[in-house]
Length: 97
Image 1: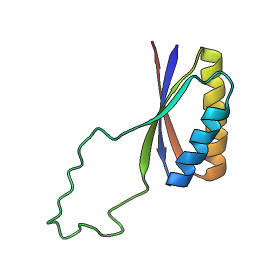
Image 2 (image 1 turned 180 degrees about the vertical axis):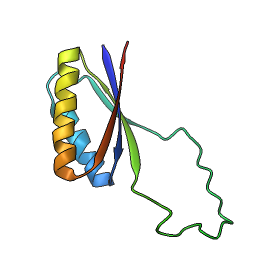
Image 3 (image 1 turned 60 degrees about the vertical axis):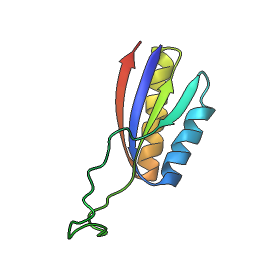
Image 4 (image 1 turned 45 degrees about the vertical axis):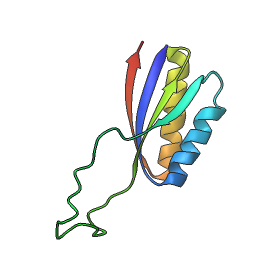
């Protein structure tokens, strides 16, 4: 069963729209936004701490379980089309279990 992981660089609304799309696709068994497991090395004493040009768009990671490679390809195509429409960056990482 293919497990797709994707990183979305965009707003909460963009991620919600992608999540809604994923849950509406036939055959998708599991969609989950996974937490950021990497600790951030923010230095609060830095002279640049909190400046708007330091922080970029939010990054979100989503895992999707698909029943087969064909459905996984449909997921990829649908997410790419929506990402283009929303003007957000989506990176895919695929694994076969």
